[in-house]
Length: 473
Image (cartoon, rainbow, N blue to C red; front, side, top):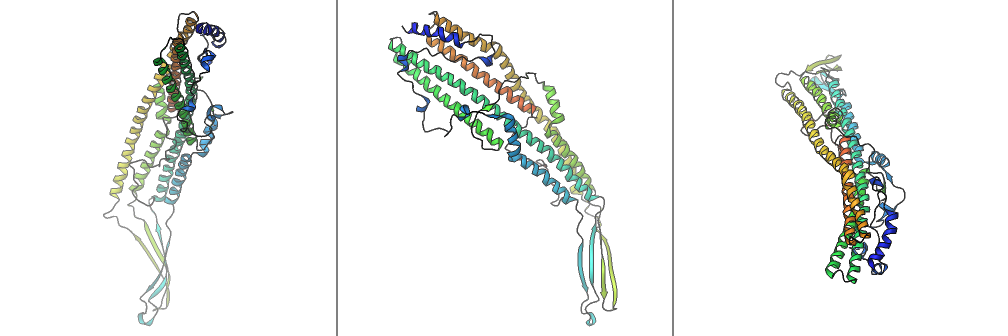
């Protein structure tokens, strides 16, 4: 009786449900056929609400998949450019360095002094009383060099600000595709859960007919509980990925579905050497390193002229109460660089320039290492995607369809068909992971391998650099 009932339902459902094998994988929507007698349906199957009912994210648990509308990638990138605090920090680094350039190029203030010499000499107010004005004359073009140094450092900050924008955008894209993958895997987990429910119902019916024992029933129930936990884990993962995405955007968005796809129309193979050449020529990290080297050259030039003495001129009118004449004072002074000719700071500037040359090389090697890691993930994922699309998924689908036909012809048992559907669903989940890995690697390689959208914007002075003087010069 059970098999006759299954066969009648199978003819109707397979005709309406299964498209041809040649259709694209994205159009395939095979869900486990519901071929269980109503008598078994009435016994009831425990739902996910019975699993740790008080351990949930909270309200709007299904909003990520059931809400109308959704969030597009362009909209999220636009919000991130306005709201992510690290982008604002990077812009402030530029402004702060420009302020240093302004300060470093300012001329020193004059100094005014009131002098009273030999007061009460001969009962007079003093031999001389008057004002003096002192002014330091900066030589060797030091102020312009100091300003140029910090203007060049501002260019370093500009390159780092561009790098920070790529970090934010790359992380938004990465978590966008991760959330998309979590949405797709949640749907596939639901299919697996439905298959587990059918497996339990089938074992109950077989038990009622004397074709299964209590061990089979308990194994089926444990399998159902495990798939329910997997489904809840997929829900948790989806919610977590969405919250991480909105954290990078910088806005506390209401949970909702995303508008996008893991499928890319552009399947052109990325060439490793071309990608590495693009990194060396366009990477903001490389450009910032070269800009910093130019700043170090200016710094060395500036320190080489630091020992050149500035002229200090002072003078002013006064009155000599002894001779009762109006007089004036004038003086010219300068430091004689007999011992201190800034030798230590010049040496430090030379070493810092040499250190920056090695920093450029280190950055190039680091980028090559990171590119190798990402390209390995990319090419491996691409190989899996093509193999799954061409062979694995079509063969798994055919095996499932053949199992259905064999069951219809009384050559296969129904639990075997359910296992075939489970295997097919697992292969589709693996393909989601493959596409996620490919998209993630593409995002990193196209985004100059930059990530860390919530890390503080870096300073234009790299680790290991130290300004020689507290006052900008």
